Length: 502
Ligand code: SF4
Image (cartoon, rainbow, N blue to C red; front, side, top):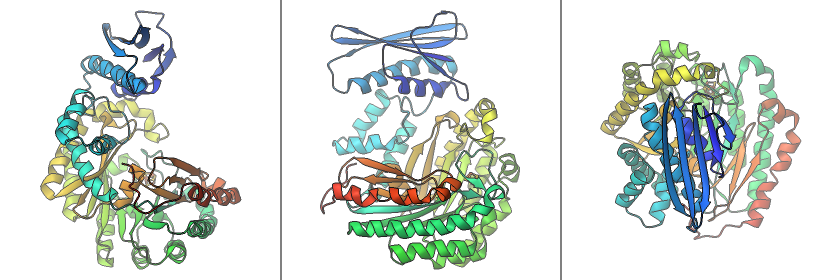
């Protein structure tokens, strides 16, 4: 599909909006007007007429043509944002009936829709007014608005715990035993990179020591949460895990007073010895991720473990004493059906984890599955609605509350990812990273440190090298860049009593 941009700068919004209606298809974004009036295309144009900006849209698809036009006061505040919204609404109203696709999120294309609610609440708006705006101006369905408002309520309690001097720590273990077909994450299968692991662990420990020194030199920063993510952190041996976690405890204070999550992830990497190390070294929350409880679907997505292994890992974790467990599921996996998804969810709920994170399949370009992207979207589009409807009913009935929510690109039917939990078991780090509430110091390959100005909105990023071999070969540069942490706080000191911006 060709998308023409004529006389305006709303490329990103127009492209994102059009993409929702042509999942898995290639879009070609061009400047100017179409030369051939018979070709399938989306044409967007802005022209100035006196004090008005005149926005027009023309769509031709499968022999059908539709147009729309709207004027915006050129002197109004936030003109750019309003033009983006108006283009998006006109496109939505034309493309929804033409394609038969009716995205529940309306014209919201951003990854953090709940931020809208926080912003409106901060302006003193009532929920009823927020509903009216989201539905009338952004075409969001009542069901999604309910989800946004409920998530915002839970999230707000977590956000209130963060102080101007708070920060969190992220440790990246970008290794996995094998690569799942749907994954685009920069993770390296052990088969190819096994040799790098010992050196990676040594350097990660050095980076932990170095970062702790820099953070302590600032003075007064408060560690809220620690998160070991991947890849699959339990790809490390029990001894390697113990060494890394000991280094964290030694350098950052033992045991961590806040939340300490280790994303064990793949059940086939979990052993009793590793679970005991995690417990002994202070992990307060772990993830064991089935994605589906259907062996046939697991095979289809190239995730080389079985349902039996998931259940055994979970039961083992409970026996070892882990009392806060998250389990991830994905809706819309190839060949999964609403019935088999419902059975997966029922089995997971039956195990009784404190957290369940429900993702919608995202078909990313770098994933093996991307070759069949269009087919996957077509096959799972309707099923995903039934899956998410079933899930929201079951979660409500079982007392699981939505506490964080984000959207990714290229998800089946533009659906969302939601973290649900039993009351009081919110995964704090998940909320902080998504909201960018406070600084996150990220260590290891692929880590992106985000330094947030205390009480302000400024964010400064410090990048580590993406791949383990670069991280290892350019480690001196990794350490050098960490000097930006004390420099940032020297320029942006925190003071007690500052309220974080929502
Ligand atoms: S376990 Fe997770 S990070 Fe690793 S390959 Fe599979 S989906 Fe990707």
